[in-house]
Image (cartoon, rainbow, N blue to C red; front, side, top):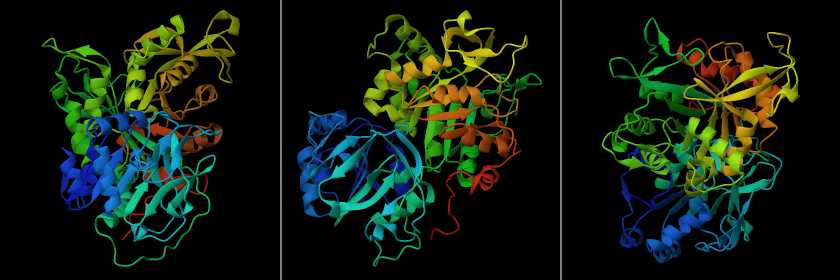
Length: 530
């Protein structure tokens, strides 16, 4: 029996599913006695350090946790669950941690993108049975802006490189904690959890010991989900956002089945975009909640959900905040939420007033769940101008001439699935959303959607050069060379595609095989992990 401490933040469903996939039962903590009587305790954490510690104090879990940690029984902390073990954090300077280990939590101050999001390796600093069955060159999934700095080097189990070498796992006797998320790290992460649940009798030597790690470029699959004319949820794909073919919604498969297939094929992340409104459904009846729950039972890589994350009123007159909608998605298995049209309207208000209200969906969700949990999806289209002086927007000089030979353009933001243009450019939107607390930009391009002509390199560079958070390039992928182009001609951390994967024109394996040796990627060693 594994006892899991769920203090109410982020996606713990995936941790439960990962443990249960190993045939182990999970008991979720409901009171202090559950902590004190636990045989093995898992503490996953996502979000804000101050919020986490405040909730732990409110629930009176702090003292029982300290008693448990000092008892010598097995403990596994994940992400913020590792941060909690230290004395204090720069994320909440006035809030103390559990202080089981002397040391602190620091914020990244580097030239690379922050949050550190994606698949990175580990430099193993001491032997441990937790790695039995692995080879040492696996990559694990990270998503964080802060890292631990222990006073005692002897507790350091692994380090990872991202602008600096930081501690990515610690271990002292039966106390183990990781900065990365094993439950989101594919077969390697599941193997690591198995070694915690059933410790091996002896430590086995690893065949590969890294001295420096590199962050992999991510290949992300997007599943546009909506109901067809018969009311069934299907995965579809539009051409310039038009999803109908011969009068009916284009049906490319069932959401849960396709997500499971892409996981097995090596997708680094899976994004669901709910393009059917369900706007008047009671929150508990949202069809996508069940899709997430089912998917998270079989898919152990990050899941993002977008569409409808805003304040709304259902058909019964019940009102829900965007934070409540996001919380429901997180509890159902989502790791990140994606905000689209609402982000444009929020940014327009910010541009007018120059003030952060703390009330927008971006700010509220980021405050509770952390910036890394908030993705802003931008749907822009090119607008050509003869001169930068014609408009008040951020204009670029383009190598792709306009219809009248124009050499300049700006990227107009749109809402309502691309149907309505707004007086706001994509670069400004990205910059504003970063200020408000977004942790990642999903950058689409209406002009390239369904065109199979490659990503809009000029758009991606314009936005990437204007922000410090990671950027996901989207729209236009038609062949493996397009992925290589976007990763070598821009600094985008990820590339997202849909149609070429759904139609089986190109497989994820084909993309990764082409990139291998040219671009840092994650290769799932399913055939080697034992």
